[in-house]
Every structure is written in C-alpha cells, then in structure tokens.
Amino acid sequence: MSAPNQSSTTPLPFLLMGIPGLEDAHTWISIPFCFMYITALLGNSTVLLAVRLDKTLHEPMYYFISMLAVIDLIFTTAVVPKMLSVFWLGSRQIAFWACFTQMFFIHMFTAVESGVLLAMSFDRYVAICNPLRYITILTNARTVQIGLLSLARGAAVMTPLMCLLTSLPYCRDRAIPHSYCEHMAVVELACADPSLSHLYSIVVATLLVGTDSVFIAFSYGMILRSVLRLPSRGVRLKSLSTCGSHLSVILLFYTGGLLSMYLQMFSLGLAPHTRVLVADFYLTVPPMLNPLIYGMKTKQIRDGIFRLLDSKQT
Image (cartoon, rainbow, N blue to C red):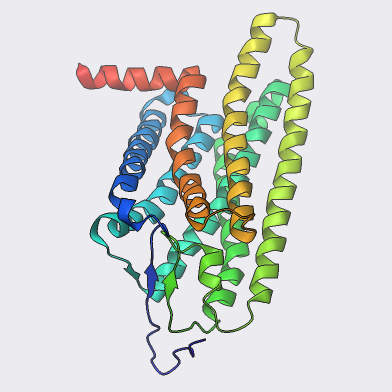
C-alpha cells in the first residue's frame, strides 16, 4: 500500500471515478440525473414559493414541508453538479476539504431530514388527536425552534465523524470508486485503521434512525386509532389522505436510505456499479418525488400552486 502523503501542508485531492465499469456510458447515464436535478429544483422551489406567497399556507405543517424542500435542494445541489461534471467533462478531481464538506452536508442533512419527518408526524398527531390545542402547542415560533433543533442535532452528531475521518492518513492512491464522496468509499482509502469511525457511524445511524422511526410509528399508530373512531367517513378519508403523503415521503426516505447504507457496507454479491447507482438514486429520486407527492396529495399546496400560477398569468 502506498504511504500517506504527510509532507505537504495541503492534502492531496481525491479523484471521483464516476460509476465503475460504466465509464463509456457516463454521458447517457447523466441524462436521467440531469432531468431529476432540474425537476427537483423546479418542484421544491415552486413549493417554497407557494408557501411563501400564499398566506393560507402559513401554518406549521406547510413550514415543515418547506423545510423538507430546502433540505432536498441542498441534497441535490451538494451532489449532482459535481456528478454531472464527472460524467460530462471528466472533471474527476475534488479537493480534500471539498470532498469532506460534501460528505458532511450529505450526512448532516440526512439526519436533519429525519428530524423534520419526526416533527411532521408529531404535527399530524396533534392536529388529529388533539385539534383544540393545536394552535397553542405548535405555534410558528415553536415550529422554527423545532427546525433549528433538527439542524443543530444533525450538525452535532456529524461533526465528530468528520473530525475522525479528516484525521486519518490517506494513501497516494486517491481514486474513489464512486460519483460523489461516499463515506464508505472514502474510508477504504485510509492507511490507518478506521474502526473507530466505522463504529461511530453505525451507532449514530442506528440510534437516529431507530429512535426517530419508533416515535414516527407511535405517532401514526395513535393517528390511525383516532381516525378510525371518527364518525364521518368523509373526515376519515380527508385525514388519511393528508397523512398518506407524509407516510409516502417517510417510506421513501427510510427505505431508500437503509438500502443504500447496507449495500455500501455489505456488497451482497452485487456489482460495484449497481451499488453506486443505488446510492446516486437515493440522493436524487426522493428530492424529485417529494414535491410531486405533496403537490398531488396535499390539496392546500396544490391549490396554492394553482393560485400562484394564475397570479403570474394575470
């Protein structure tokens, strides 16, 4: 194994290899990723604009949806532009600190999104199970505090991981067999034992996902019980429809995240390009679909977007 470069004060850059084994098809592969990125930008920006300009959407539920839209914009922008430059221009080099900054944003906002999804489930729980106290429990100020708490939690749990990873010596072979700075792919280039960072990442991911999932499941269990007790069939269907969009986003986020994480940790006999593509799609498909899910499932946002479009035409 090559010796680590310790002679220079500026660490050597890494090289992103794109999708191993499919280098000749990079141009064609880039087309769906470019489409998903543009769709994610337009969809999430439209949701943010609708919530910002339509005063009927100035409620906690829509503020949480706006937070989710901001996270999706950060997710895609942190990864896709550099990915496309690798596919289109062969611009494989990424600076040492830029690589870990990209990794930090991906992992931090994954944790932040988990916190926002938990907050959204709590919002629906209060709205359906305790509607008379909704406006006193979830004020606008408290909604902002919950968002900031999710952001602080994400930064707090990911900063130690980044410190552990950047303190490792990396060998002269800086080729990352991935299209972005994926955690496991980068750690494999370390010349020292990365067991501590492995342990920390597994423990943090398990605790975050496990704890948030349990509370989300509990919230929706209580919601389902309350909805089934409602006397009116129309009210039951309306409540289930609102929660359906949230559950769709939650399942997409957690199922995709767990699948991507475990495929990076355990190859399961899959080809390297399959695992890379799964990780790439996890960071691009949910941000594209989330605004479409809310636009189709949430009548208030759909109406807000239509009002926004009508005002632009007049």
